[in-house]
Structures are given as C-alpha cells and as structure tokens.
Image (cartoon, rainbow, N blue to C red):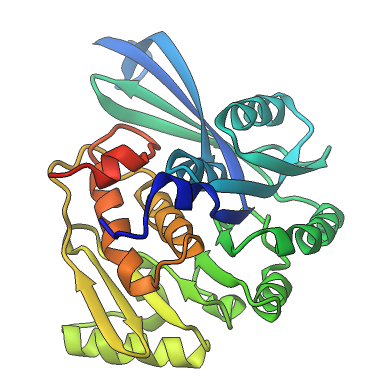
Length: 313
C-alpha cells in the first residue's frame, strides 16, 4: 500500500462524475420448465433487486473507497428516475440531476435464472439538448470544488457537450478522465486520460498483431488526441498504460472471474479517486487493476471498499 494513502487522505479527495446514469434492475427466479408457447425457459420470479448503474455506479465506486463524489446527469421525470435518485441519495453521492419530461430514464432489466443471466431488456431514449445545456451551467459551478473530473460515456446522449466540458476542466487545471464509447474518440481530444477496453480501442485504431504494433498505434492515437495517457483495459491480459514515459503493463490479478459487469467502472473510479488523493497515474494504475480483480469476483455491478483493496495479503 502506498504510504500516502489513508482513509483520511481519500476522504478529502473530490471527484465530479459527469455522464449517463442508469437504473439496473435484477429479477431472480427459478427455472423449472420450458414454455409450451415457445422454446424458452419459464422464469418464476422470486426476488427483485435494484442498483444504480453506469455513471451512478462509477460515482458509487468512488464513495465506497471513501472519497467524495458528485454526480451530474440527465434523467427523465418518471418512476425509474425517482427510484434512481432515492438509491443514489442513500449512497452518499451528491446528485445533480437535470430532468427532461420527454426522456425515458435508462433502465437495464436483467432476468437471472440458475445463477446466470437469461435475458436483458433495455428501456431508453435520448435527452433534449436544452436539458444538456442547463447541465453545462451546473458543470461550470461544480468544477472549482473538485480535483478530478470523470466523464462516464455510455452513449446515451448525456455527454453532448463533452468537448466544451473537457476544455473547461483542463483550462481550470483539473485532471479529466474519460471512459469512452463508440468510434469517435476525437470528441475526447485534450483529456488527461481515456480508458478504452480492448474492443473499444480496436474499433478506433484497428486490429494489432503484436505488442509492438499496439504500442505504435496507441502512442500515435495518444499524440494525435493530445492526451497525457491512454489506459487500455485488456480483460485477462490485465491493462497497459501508454504515456510520455513509454508503457506500463500490469497483468490481471483476478483470482476468480464471476461477472465482469462494471469492472471498467471500478477501474476508472479507482484511478480518479487515487489521482484526486495525490497519486501519480503510474502509481494508481496497479491499484486500479487490483480493484478490478476484486470486483469481477462479485455478481453484477459491484464496488470495492478501502479495506478490501488495501488488506494485507
């Protein structure tokens, strides 16, 4: 454990999370037969659970580690949005929700039977630009109160103004981390760090056949977008940081992979928290990798606390 990291140093770290918040619903049930109507399992629902997801889960990872998180997002004026807000309020996250009556709050409903996901239903649409513009004003007010800004892009429309927001954050001397989505990385130009997974990076720079080719393409992308660093999460291969010093690779530490849902959230949330607490990126990356290794051993979107992450082995 880094000697500068204590619960009290993390308690003073402040991260502003901006992005698409969602509600994760889980319906658990028994599967005893196949439907006579179609060759599909019949799930007799015995238990339901609701959790905060996407950008809200990123913020939850931050407060679970013991730091302070504000969440700036756009939601609907519907039942799901109020449920989401109630759940967020219980976590210690400070929410700043813009509301749009025409927006359907994003809900991901997962049906679980026999300890595995059988089906996922997504309910969503895109927010109005007027609501996003009002959130830009809130962003400007919140910026001075936080050391780090974390943009959690899930492609749901909540980050239409990310180019301007990154510019404002960097002009204010803040570290801006981005969990990207889609193939247009140009919109993340001038960010401090972006954290694509292997598939997301491949969509942007193309396939690579060797580590040397990946190194060349990653540094070219980093320089082209004027990034301080590019952190690639690589599932069972661990993660690799590409920065001005070169590369830093950390192999995976997962003891048992039960569910990779939300692992990327944990990585970027841990990075943001540690950097806000004063660590360098190179010191923070191995710890974020360790956090991911813990969280994939849990079911569903999960978090890691200070004791779990820093417990002596």
